[in-house]
Each structure stands twice: as C-alpha cells, then as structure tokens.
Image (tube, rainbow, N blue to C red):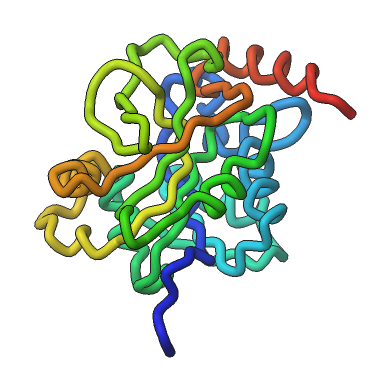
Length: 231
C-alpha cells in the first residue's frame, strides 16, 4: 500500500498520572476529569471527529481500563503502556498501530475556543519543507499557563527554541526519527531537536483562545472559557 504524505491518523496521549490535578485524579485518570459536564478526552476527540480522521490511537497506563470503558463502542485502538514512557516513548511504542505515515498527536488536557486547530494544521501542512508542524499559542491568548513559552517563530513559520509562543499540544509530525532514539521512555523534545537541527520544525499561530487544564485552577478557567462560546 503506498504511503501518504498527509496524516489520517491521530495519537491521543492519555497515559499520564495527572498528579497536578490533586484529588481530582486520585480515583480517575485526568482524561476523564469533567469540564462543563464532559470528559476532557471527549472534548479532544470532538476535534478529530470534526475533520474526519480515519484512525485514532489512545495510549493508556494510569487507570487505563476506565478510559477503555468510557470509550467502549467507538472505533478507537489502544496502546497499553506497562510503564510511563513519556510522549516520545509512548509515540514510538504505538508505531505498530499508527503506521509509517505522518501522524497527528493530540494532548487530552487542553480546551480550545475558536477554529479547529487540527483543521488549520492539515490545511497548512507541507511535508516537502516540514518534518513537524505544531499549533502555537500567543501568551496573551493562553489561560492557565504560567511559563515563558516554548518557541520563537520566524516570519515563514520556522521555529527555534526560546521564550515566546506556547506549544498547544497538537501537531502533525513525521515519525521516522523516533527509530534513531535509543531509549524507551523519552520526551518528544528529543525528536523536535532532530528537526530543529535540520530547520524542519515549523509552527502555526492559533487565532483563538486556549486553556491548559493541568490543575484545578485550570479546570475553572476552562469552564469559564467554554461558557463564553457562542451557541
């Protein structure tokens, strides 16, 4: 079967312990924490459903069976991790399910207000120039985030490390470089560093608002943000 240059598969990260959520994740995994009456993972899957992604893979570890039960009946594949592998290791371990083509990766702990970030990434993806294209949030549009930012973006979208825009947790990327990383558990930062060294890591600026739901304060901010949406 010929390989595609356009992603039609998404990897949704759902394996972490969610320790910053405190008591909220003592009995449930963070992807099942409710925001405005719906689980975080359902808000994330809404984004993929809206653009017709054909294959969805969810990685699991902490209270993984609860997530399996919650998603029962949906066309979703699961990559169970015997130990926490971090984002890069989790993606590498899931490659047999994901296949060799570029993939979307999506964190399950953010709420977006505005255009669908996946649709925007798909429209801007250019595999001839890019090994990855990530959605970046200007600090003034980010709620629940206290850092200095992750990347500086040049006029053409090419990225370098440094204070500035915030990685929003959704991207398109090629996965071949994962095989060059001789570790089981590692951050996607190692793969991004490969791409940065080749000048092939790119970003796209999100025009709407974004909320990091990493702690209970972020949960309240997310619910307030959803409450401002037009019905």
